Image (cartoon, rainbow, N blue to C red; front, side):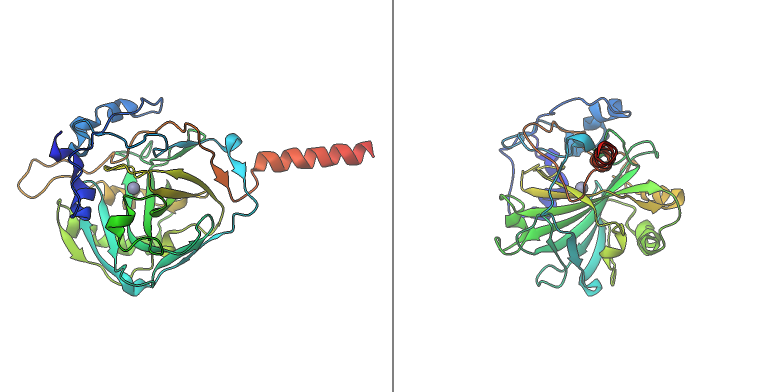
Length: 311
Ligand SMILES: [Zn+2]
């Protein structure tokens, strides 16, 4: 086991070593850009070595097949209540940049939807590609987006700390938001403007008063399923909430993401791009939707029309 394989989350976790865990590459996918993914061990040390996927039956990310998702009428909208004052700093962890929050109180929480109780916001980060053809971790009917935002929350009713929750069942709730190219995202620009200050791995800078809810789409529809972290230790502790509608950012904003580096000062520069995990098999899981799929609605309408015509 190469300890080098475990990087960013280990840095966050601190107290636990996952030295006994091994990672195995689960599958190849048919997406564009997968040749890059197959070589990801060369791309980033995070994916070097063999790491076990514990259990291995509910790994993330996945391709969401709209036709196979099941509408769950009891799924209420997810409610976020974020206090911009809890925003602390931004740091380059060598795989993405993390915007981290004070999670010692319930000031920034998510509740509702599939969640039994409030979860506290710990951090958010993004995954993105080297160009606009790929970059998201999840896909929808095999559609890939240029980037994906993850807002990471932990179950403060069940666990005492984020570090504990990350390893346990029902420990985390992650909201995923797709980014697509369109008009400039004005609120995101505050974040984009500060990114050059965390260009190198391990750089950290103060970043205050940011309301992460500005990064959510106005449409409340989402899919939800049980999955895992998409970086080591890959623990299957995550309730995923994937927003149906993407948010828009412009090309120049993503270009700044791509100007960050995986590498530290003094190392050979490697641009921070393609920092996503390949798709994982859905196995015996159901993706639930909070909304009635359009196909079913149009089918229902047609049946009603037929009935009316017949009547
Ligand atoms: Zn992520």
